[in-house]
Image (tube, rainbow, N blue to C red; front, side, top):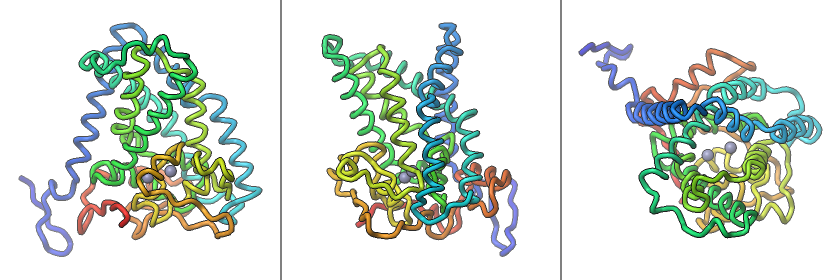
Length: 325
Ligand SMILES: [Zn+2]
Ligand SMILES: [Zn+2]
């Protein structure tokens, strides 16, 4: 085995310089994506399914929400920054990664989990839901999908290999609406597994109304906007930008306000911290900057370093976010 010697004189093996569990997450994601591609190619529907996924996740409504939020951030910034910050410019790079890499991966993970669960766990399908009123069935499915996403987000903060990917999302110190897309393309494994479960149980191989999924994505995107909106009484139920900003504070990253669209799961878990409209906006980012942070705008080198960071061993342990006491 090759052994190199670090500057400090201690022997460092290649195995010690990498964090192997994240390679396992990457391999599992790659395997599932390959399975979905093979399945869809056999059916001759790969292009159609990828286009459908893109239409749901990057629908015109999502584009409108982003555009309006970008204007509102200039008019009423929560943190007082009206200019185009380095963080916003850098997150525009992540929007590109999202569109070209993450959206196809998310769509294919959804297909893979749906297909595997329907094939190997048909017993999970709840019989008789076909006769339920469709709006009620779809609304219940989306609420349970949100519960699945909450659980996956909790796991992102509790389990070291998942946190190493999720930390990139929390590294933004100038939170803005495009931070919604600042996610590692390999960070979606747990979320899509847990969000697919209620679809298989309730809807089977029928499709959830695309408009509901798009609406869900819109709320989850808007919650990152740098605006002080609490949504008033509605904000007690729906995640507002002010509520999600607390999750992006160094303290929130310890496991507060994990909700994606509904706050109820945080309330039930004792993790909800509702914003005080009179209080100044909290700072965002991670204490100690375990993930490199851009300094001057869209920096390709920093972006690549951020994407590669989960695979590197960290000095003094991996620095997992812990649960709040
Ligand atoms: Zn977020
Ligand atoms: Zn988080």
